[in-house]
Amino acid sequence: MTTLLPSTDQVWDWLSEVPDPEIPVVSVTDLGIVREVRWDEGTLVVAVTPTYSGCPATAVIDLMIETHLREKGIDDLRLERRLSPPWTTDWVSEEGRDKLRAYGIAPPVDGTASDGMTAGRAARLSGKSNLVIVCPRCGSNQTERVSQFGSTPCKASYRCRDCLEPFDYFKCH
Amino acid sequence: MPSLPDAATPDAAALAKQAAAHQSHDPHVADVDLQPALFDWLCRMGDNSLVLGHRLSEWCGHGPALEEDIALANTALDLIGQTQMWLALAGEVEDAGRTADDLAYLRDTSKFRNLKLVELPNDDLAVTLMRGFLFDAFHFELLKELAGSSSPRVAEIAAKALKEVSYHLERSSDLVVRLGDGTTESHERMQAALNRLWPYTGEMFKADGVDEAVAEAGIAPKLSDVLPVWQRTVDDVLSEATLAKPDRKFDAQTGGKQGRHTEHLGFLLAEMQFLQRAYPGASW
Ligand SMILES: [Zn+2]
Image (cartoon, rainbow over all chains, first blue to last red; front, top):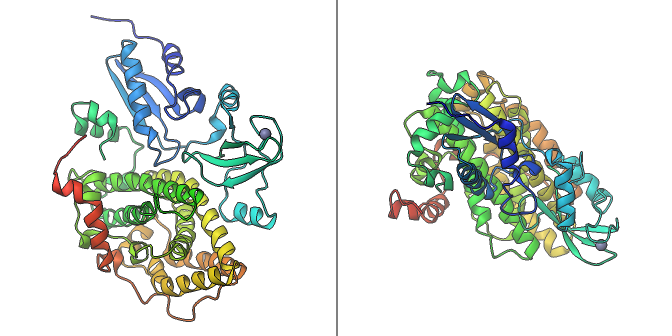
């Protein structure tokens, strides 16, 4: 018996309906964590990369992808974990950035990933972070970092000096 | 810690084998001559991040400020995530069917290969932060070298971990400077922490046969090459923090890498391994 396998484009569309469990306004494809979709004979292979190695959402994301694709009629499915190249926030789509902003989270500023000592030293010498993170609520660039870590490993805590609201920054990684 | 997809699929072992078969090819993984040393070395990598990660997790709910509490817990999470990758690879190299969980939860003290530095109790925040900095400076440099390892499997884990550890080092060096060059009390406590931890730092750079074998194979750098970079980082940060480098031997306390631990590790494992020991094979 032969059945027509759905196209990989179709599968990508389905995957764009799977939300991130911690920031449900963005999908797993918006985040750029789905690295490959391919057919291996009759088995659908979806390669997923973790955002942070200890991210507790990783297992939940795998389960949500599996559940969603099974609902779409995919019986033969294999999820692969891909470490290399490591995930970077540069892979967050434009659409994903707009959705984050609308949700009250400042999207990552590209090319500002932590460089350990160098970045730390620069931040210390200037007395504050050298990044300009725009407030997602009022658009002000008068913001300050409250904490390098936020409610999840991928976020830092910021405060706006104009509208005085605290907000999360999806930090560059 | 069984992951949800594993729990939902009937044959996790078969799936793991299938997934392993699709990993990038790495000749070192199946190298019989190298196997004992590589297994031991991977356990050292995994056990350092596991034991330090567990120590940091002990702060959860006890941090001096909410932001610190969150930062310590997040750092712990990064390290435990890295542990899963190192110990899973160790299990693959050993080829005796042991998973990362088996290695983490079912080995006894003498089989742990972590540095004594990371098993010491947290004591106060000064000791915790100073230990973090002394280890992060080493960890960062080591991972940077490992990202160019001759083993593609080691290189990809290192590249992933490096991104996280660069944050750890940024944070810990910043805090060492702020507290060292802070109030009289914070300065004194940071200096006391440094003096206490100093004799444990030399173990990071003391190479034995295992370290030499993996360096020989191009998998890991020579520890003697990592030392000068670490010294430079430590000198820089300590001088900015107005702290004095202790004038005493830095390698008086060694043996953890060979399984000879302080009494503190047993207590840590008793807590960490309790559930898996009391309820073997428990799943939830
Ligand atoms: Zn604002």
